[in-house]
Length: 163
Figure 1 (cartoon, rainbow, N blue to C red):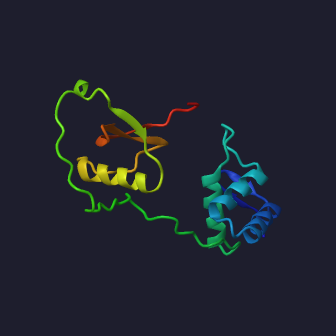
Figure 2 (cartoon, one colour; figure 1 turned 120 degrees about the vertical axis):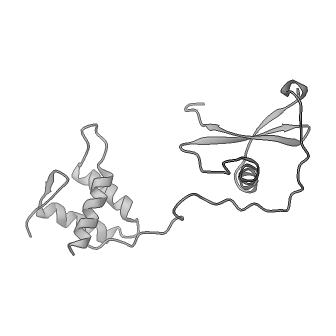
Figure 3 (tube, rainbow, N blue to C red; figure 1 turned 60 degrees about the vertical axis):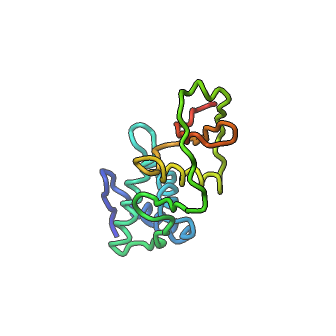
């Protein structure tokens, strides 16, 4: 077997043998982690210094399709498309709150915790926001705005670095 050229780089027979060995020995990791490992070992990087993970995954899939190595099956970790929030009818409909924000001087901002509270926050947004509850891009924090124990609002904002 001779070398293989892919994405501007020619891989030698020993490099392809190494890819085959890694794919076989670390099949429990999954294709993405195997691609990262191959990139690190072969020092396949972008001009900026980052690993060419995506190109390496495509190369591994190309080699698999050519019968040159075996890759583990792709794991089904989640559905495709936007996540659906199931709104339960267990909660009573909240009565309307009206008035200027200054009239609610004892408002509290409370960070939403994981688990049931997070699920409840998503249900509120799905039920009351005109866009529903799409998954925001990037790291984010979610908050309840409360007044005398009642939920007045749900907020979502970017997570700040270092703070």
